View 1 (spheres, rainbow, N blue to C red):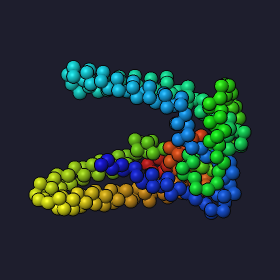
View 2: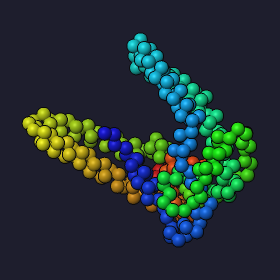
View 3: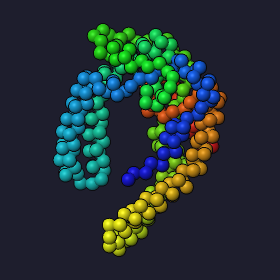
View 4: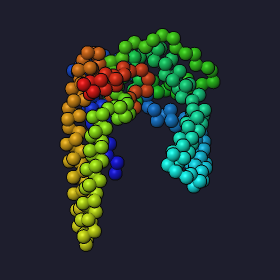
Length: 268
């Protein structure tokens, strides 16, 4: 099982930074919602993803064949980078125009409805304007979608990009490294216990204990980061008059990016 040290950010974003519920109900009229699954289910996207899947399979075979001739780690890494870049280029070539059309449709509908942000519908329990049908109609239409020149209004919804925090914070890296070292030590210890187990019940109990030990250690490492991230995010949200902060993955269009603000706060 892969334990992500940045579960604390996911937890933060799930909870969000809320003001009074009544204020949210009144203020979220400029928030749109969309079912991203409906976009992904469009025939054009289904066809594009099938095409990419076939290309990926072919490239994997080619990469494996080249790897056999690699003489050292440097050559293997170069082969991996080369195929990764080739696939990314193909992905941009095939999906790029479709994604661009979706973005144009989102911008057009948002401007028409005076929306400051569009979020994935699955995170909204109540409120917001569902623009799924409007966007689908534009995307599947035959006419070109003109770009919107007007700048969206400031959004009351903030977001944090977990990947940026994950890759650029020494404190997170230190926690990751500490947990990885601890996990490796525990695997060795529990592997010995598992070898001595004689029944399925004993093996199951050892497995439960192992997972609990890892979970407890992860909680210990995460707690200081969770507390600090929540405090920093709450302060930033108040300064920027944000009603809620979510993960970037839930933002479809617009929104206020506070990733760098949170990152700066964690580095101090």
